[in-house]
Length: 245
Length: 245
DNA sequence: CGTCATTTTGAGGTATTTCAACGAAGGTGG
DNA sequence: CCACCTTCGTTGAAATACCTCAAAATGACG
Image (cartoon, rainbow over all chains, first blue to last red; front, side, top):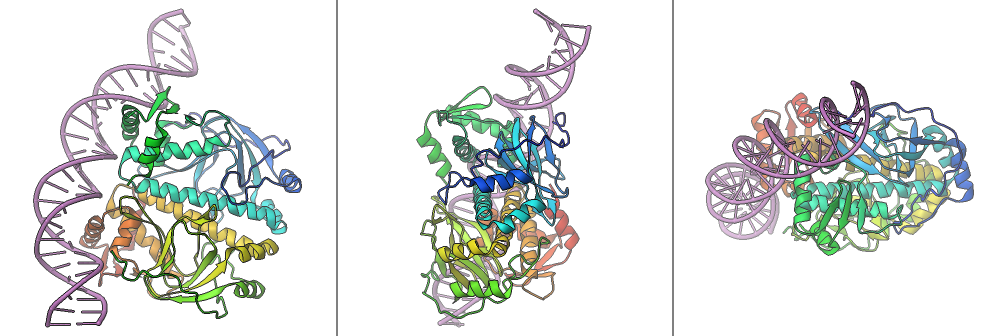
């Protein structure tokens, strides 16, 4: 299933410039880019990679040797359950840091869902840098904190019992993520992930996601132009639906 | 509903000693307590509080001025939804750090569910200390990372569609949390929270939690001795149930 | 020992899951 | 360029599991 694109991580080229990692961009707290010095330090220990869609970055349980920072494209973090179902823990976009580990092992598997540009940073080297640069570490801390909020929001989403409501919350979440990297119309959302991935993220069956999408269209809240382009017709209704219950 | 105990946060006494905050205890990565120096620095800026059960610490949306570290007892972080339902985002036990904020405001409300001893640390003072002590900050970073894993685990739990399975995962989670503070029998779990709180955490109705509990008893996996004491009869079955699907 | 809160148990309604078949889109090869 | 195949998405119908409403039972506490 969908393993056609599966492949292992290449060693990757070694070009410089972690350009404009908006570590902490967006959300209120101490919005700040990296200083020239910090950028230089990170560039010195990181490898820049360009990967096609569908590439496996690492597998759940593997030795966690790197942390990744996305600069372009989208990645999914997921776990394969014994039943064969695939639960998506998070979608990562530009500016997101990932590579969550526990006891030295990655807790999720990750796979690109679009062509991606990212930076791969050796964990030990990063720890070294962070030990000497409290400011940089603070930015990482804020990043992780943000990821925690996201995860809690997902838990809130999954707590809902109506499929349409979950989908509404999901669409708004993606919109917020994308508005930072796209300068385009905020009412148009390009969904880089498949319906199956959305279903895995929302803990719904593929069919229910499809039906919920149809319901949102029927209620004139959004329209799907093609399978991956969503146009919001009524932001008010969408937000109301997302907030309800 | 259960607002009998609700009250506002007292100004609190000012005794010293953040004793043995196992910042990072347990989970593999760099298990380490605070150094004497770090403990001293934190004590200097924190206020130690002893609170009864049912005390509100702060309310969702309030100005986030403090971070809290629990040393004894249990706290719940929750959000009240428009429908009147109460969704529990996390249970906090000894050693846990909480006070998650976004844009300077707390994202959850918190309330003690047992008598609690904790330390209240002003956010600005803490930020100051962390700026000068990268090692201490690293310990905080690991704490937050751990909270992120917990939240992802909750999302995984909520992704399940069977009540008994969710409850099984919950019991194992609580067991793990408690084994660090209690030296007692690991097969006996003292649940400090009500069925209603469990229902809010697992996004189930109170009745379903009750029925799921009954099912676990019927299957000889656990027994409830009193309402809050759980004895695990068959760890293997419990883990199998938690891992399944 | 009585009162209040919490928990359990019962019965019906509703949403999602599952199973199954169909339709659309993209890539490949002849 | 078209046929074929694979993947993905949509639609339909039945089964299951949870939610809601309602009432009884248990437990905590003064």
